[in-house]
Amino acid sequence: MTKSRVDYRKAAPDAFKAMLALEAGVHRTGLEPSLIELVKMRVSQINGCAYCLDMHSKDARAAGETEQRLYLLSAWREAPFYTDRERAALNWAEAVTQVATNDLPDALYDEVRTQFDEKGMVELTLAIIAINGWNRLAIGFRAEVGGYVAKAAD
Image (tube, rainbow, N blue to C red; front, side, top):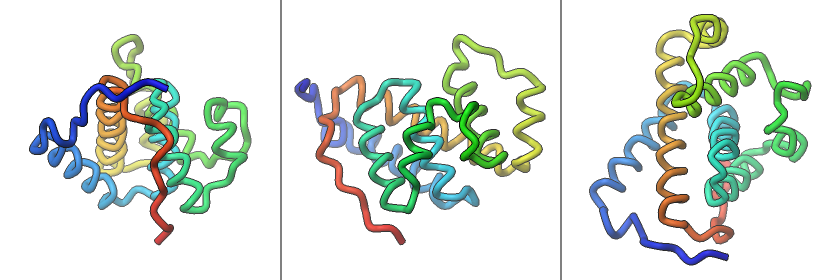
């Protein structure tokens, strides 16, 4: 187990509050909580963020997500357990997360737009931006993995 480098919450409290505000905004959108958790999990898988995978797998389970869907998330294209809307969100999440090495073609945008209106597209993209930011904080500063306790489902 690696030792945490710095507690970014304490080192830069105003910046941390800004991240929390973005996160709160994501949860006030019209996006389904289960969709948000799947996106957070998939992005965290791509980025290799153990802290966020631990956190969001626990949150997803607490909210009623099935083990099967969580286990197969990295192979969502081959698994029949995801809705068309979830598939579109996961495809967009992967593309936006990997934008430095991949294009965001019009065909992909058009596909995602069949499931999300303009507002939903922006909200989804902000959710992806938020989890990418959290991943980078947790990985960069080696957030300690395993201690997170999920909140009870609403």
